[in-house]
Each structure stands twice: as structure tokens, then as C-alpha cells.
Length: 411
Ligand SMILES: Cc1ncc(COP(=O)(O)O)c(C=O)c1O
Image (cartoon, rainbow, N blue to C red):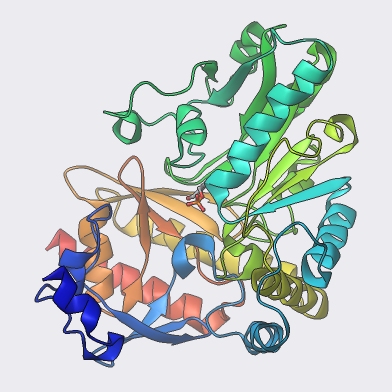
């Protein structure tokens, strides 16, 4: 059979008689929609149905779908240079590194391809940084309860979700957890064995929980006093999602290491670890790498994203639309107190608890059937993360559909 297939030219091969859903490894409980195109806040499926997209590829498409500036940058770069390896410098990643470190007040940027890889880099940097200073006992990476940092082994070890970890033992050693927003617990656990403390300023996957500014300030102080690095994972909450370009600006606490991915290139695969002065010498030549990291096309897309941010008033829009979303969801919660809880979140990363026995997933399905895509998150939460360019009338429409969906589920 194999010989037969290999003798055929690629276009003569018959596709196996399985559906796309069967052919894909079932690691996702995929929603039965085949998306074919998008523009702005709208997605279109293979049957021609249009959806208002209020999840944006899970906080990825900050500028919406098919943004002309990103499309143009990607097309132009594809014609010029697609890959050269990281053995050489190239203009898009070099410029992107300069732009990001300048905007974040950092010193270096390392590029990879995803969020989990950015966190792996941060974990490795923290341990190597301590080792270089002669403190090889400093190995522990402390993370928060409710954290999500990714699916590769190191990031998974820093992720506080038993379901995601189940069956993958042994995970790497040297990880511990601090109760989210509990300064006393942090104080008790940051000691001379700790290489770094990692936190999401706004936790996304566990159900949209915002860190207290006091907690992040205490983390900064304790890391400084006790010789540990402070890592912020802004993979979901960064790149303008909560208003300013970086979530840490909202809290007024700058980490030593910042990880980004998701929205950085508005949908092209890229991750970044930005490193500040204190940790600047943590990784040296040969310590870490990535074949595709910061490839010219994603880097060009990320530069286009930054340029659009500079030319538009995205932060102002995020503030205004956020107020509108919160007001609408609060009113919804007042009208349906048995089913919808108080909204929480920051900027355009918003979650709302669904009260049992009702299920967030049922409301998500009812909303989709009415032409609105929303997300869910841990703790029976509905999650809203629309493109940051979302317009007032689109928010109005989405809130109307959510209400309709809740009515439908309530029966
Ligand atoms: C806060 C956070 N960190 C890390 C990740 C992992 O990113 P990726 O899926 O790109 O590996 C995610 C993804 O949802 C995330 O939300």
C-alpha cells in the first residue's frame, strides 16, 4: 500500500476515507464549525454562516481578522525572505527586538514560536542565572494557584491544573505553588531555594482572575530582597488586551522577565521572552535556541501590529468597550441572578461565572447558534476576548445575543 502511494504523484493520491476531525489527533474537544475566512470581528464558516467573534482565537487576533496592515506585511516579507535561521541576523526580528525592549524597558528579547516555549525559556533562564552567580541551590520556580503557563513539560510543571498534568508524571522537579493574591503565603515561600516567581497579572485559563496590585508589588519587593527573579506571563493578558501595551504597566510593577505570544503577531506563530537588566546575562551563546523563533514573517507581522497600535487609539477603544462590556454583563447578571454572576477581568479580557446547574458551555453553544462566538474558561466561566478594534455596535449586538442565549438556556 505504501509503495503504491509513493509511486503516485502527490496530486494523484486519494485522501484516506476519514473526516478531517478523525484525522486530527483529538487533543481538542473541537466545536463543529469549519472556519474559512474572517474580516475584522467577523468569521465565516464553510456553510457561509457569519459569526461575531468575541474570542479572537483566544486573545490572539487583537487587530481582528485579515487586518490589511498585517496581510501586507506578511505578503511583502514572504516575497523577500522566509527563513535564514538564527545563525544570522535579519531585519524583521532585529527591529522587533529593539522595538519590544524599548517599549518594555528591558534589555534583550529572545524569540520562539509559542507561549509555552517562551515560558520554557524563562524557566531555563532563571535557573541558569542563579547557577552563573554560584547559587546552584536556587532551582525552585514558584507559580500561583490557578496558573496556566502551557503544555510542554516545564510550563506544565508550573501550571496548577490537575487535569492537564494527570498521567504525564514525572514532570520536572523544582516547582512549587503560592496561593494567588496571598501576600503572606508568598512571603513564607520565597526563600534562598527560589530561582524565580512566575505569575500572570490576569489569569486567563482558570477563569479570568485579576492579580491584586499589592500582591504583584509584594512579589517585586520579595524577589529583590531575597535574590529571586520575577517573571510575568503576559501571553494572554499582554499586547494591549487590558489597555496598555503591557499588563505590567497597569499594575506599575516591572518584572525581570516578561513572556509574550498569542497577540504579538496578530495570529502568526511567535513567542517572546523579554529580559531586563537584572537578568540580562542569564543565558549565553549555546544555552538556548529555536530554529524558527522570530522568523521573518511572524516578526514582520508583529512589527505591523505595533505600527497599527501607534497609529490608532487602541488603548482608548479598549477602555471604552471594556466599560460597555462590564456594564452590559452587570445588567445581565442583575436580570438573571440565578444563572449569571458578577463579571470580572480587565480591559477586554472578561469572565463571568455561570451558576450551577447551568453550564457555561451550554450558553456558549446557544450563543454560537445565534451567531456569536465566545469562549469558556475554568470554574464554569464564560470568557470574552474580542478583537481590540471591536466597535460599540458590535459590543451592543454581542450583549444582546448573550442575553438571548441565557434566556434560551434558562428555558
Ligand atoms: C497565560 C498563558 N501562558 C501560556 C500559554 C501557552 O501558550 P501557547 O498555547 O502558545 O503555548 C497560554 C495559552 O493559553 C496562556 O494563556
